[in-house]
Length: 209
Image 1 (tube, one colour):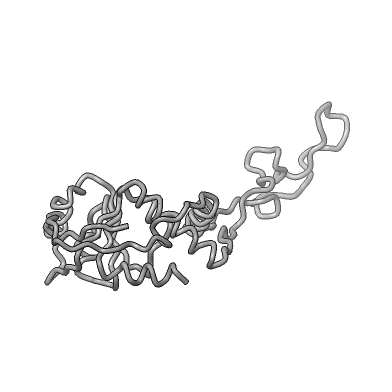
Image 2 (image 1 turned 30 degrees about the horizontal axis):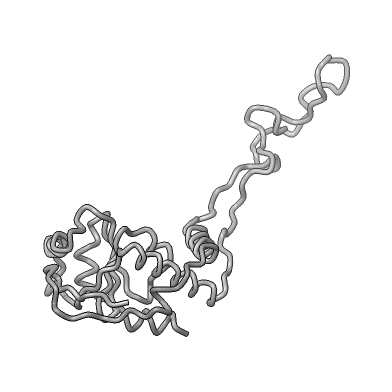
């Protein structure tokens, strides 16, 4: 599919680029997308939750009342999970939520995400640009020129660009990543995908393997 190339003022440069059908026009595999997004979100979890169990609660271990003759149930120490202040039964323990996926599945998931965005006509190709110094106002002007100031957008750079990244860091609705950091979640979480020209070759090379 052909997409016109815009400059950072939002104007047509008169050039077009051909997006690879093997990356941007496949039949999306929803299950692969689901697994990749699930893995991404699982990896964000710290897994540091912890509840004290019976052996870890502070308190005496003496038997709090005699075994028989009280008319109530038997009871041991005050650490019994049935009592207020007692231990937690099967409480959460620190653990890792991460799990593995093979490279081919993750590659398929990213191609599916790109294809979904292409079908929705949510991909913009922008010629490479840079700022002399980090400047949020300049980045906001780019968003306004592309009519993205009120939309969630993802800018994909061909390589790390510190000035562009720092210029966007204070904006909640916009995210800037290099093509090597791109994830399925990032692609789908944005309303519009802005691909810089230098990122296209890297993306197609990585996903066409």
